Image (cartoon, rainbow, N blue to C red):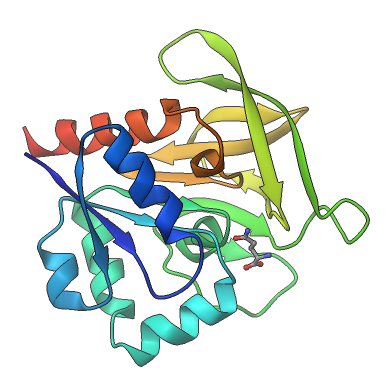
Length: 193
Ligand code: GLN
């Protein structure tokens, strides 16, 4: 039985926990390094990346989360995606460098800072549609050679993976769709056997 950790220092962690319950998977809210060590994978939710950085450092979890991501699956959504990226463009903002992507914060601007639109996903070879919820979302502006894109909004990559790490700019926890969470769970299962 796997245990999925959900970082619960700030932001949209409840909805991820509900999603795990829908999928009949055990999850635990993570607020300390000790709790993190009891998990097989970690979801870093949306919220405000600068606040999350400050809280992770205040709770002395910054290094533990980075170390965790070196060996176990981590899925960062929105602010979580910003946190695990290798670099943030046009900003001097710290990150965990877990996936070789560059992101731009609040990339859709004030006019359309939140929206819902059709997106395309390719999780297991076939291209499918999905509803994408974007809330003051970042954009993935470049990916490294070892990163695989898995979903797109128009021409923009909105979900990408590198080994155990999954980074997405949108919020699948806010729709009834379970496909992305299910994909992350499979990643955790594969990492264990
Ligand atoms: N705009 C936020 C940031 O830059 C992310 C928004 C979100 O997580 N929904 O951190």
